[in-house]
Figure 1 (spheres, rainbow, N blue to C red):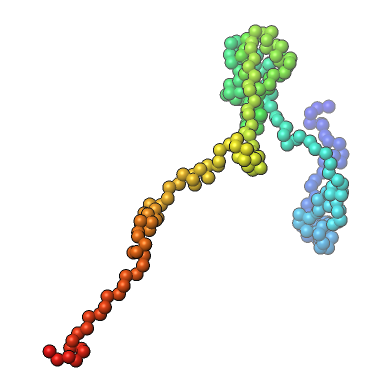
Figure 2 (cartoon, rainbow, N blue to C red):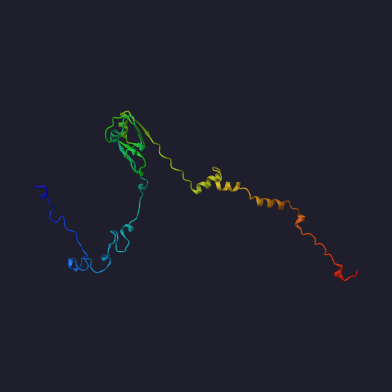
Amino acid sequence: MRLHDLKPRPGAKHRRKRIGFGESSGKGKTAGKGHKGQKARAGSGAHAAFEGGQMPLYRRLPRRGFNNARFHKTWALVNVSTLEKSFEAGATVDEATLREQGFIKGAKWAGLKILGNGDLSKKLTIVADKVSASARTKIEAAGGTIQIVEPRAKPERHSAKKRIAEERAGKTPAPAAEEAKAAKPAKPAKAAKTEEAEKAPAEEATPAAEAPEEVNPADSGEES
């Protein structure tokens, strides 16, 4: 038997079904889809969980329990065998150097973890977030050192209720908005107007007596 004599089993491969070529194609006028209806349309068919409109099973069953899948951390894993092949003795190995050589790509990693698969004979300085027990043993046996990166501190979150309680207890100063409002000077025009009103005497506030009108003798009809 030669290579050109190898053939697939009968029935394992067949031609693709070509429909929509008219009545003489052998697939009928409606191309095997029947007359109209949902299943005769292009792109038809409900999803696998569809139950005809009734409440599906995945909604009838209760949801219970909790898991930490949302908070799971994914670490960039590097074995000591990779360090043995890629670094010289006395080198410092951290996440930045591993990224330069292409062993770590992307930004989805929570940090670097060194695993103990393989052998290590070079003295290296390892700077990582995590190191397995077997990797630590091999690194220290080769004379290397390990520096564990301190975890990044999460920012403290203060709720409104906690902030108000601390302000009432006098632990924290007043908010910046209230301080700015207290230190804001009055408008100069309004301040000058207020001072003038205070200095003005009370007599000026009362209206002055009207002066008597002068009488023209010509108008009164007297002869000179």
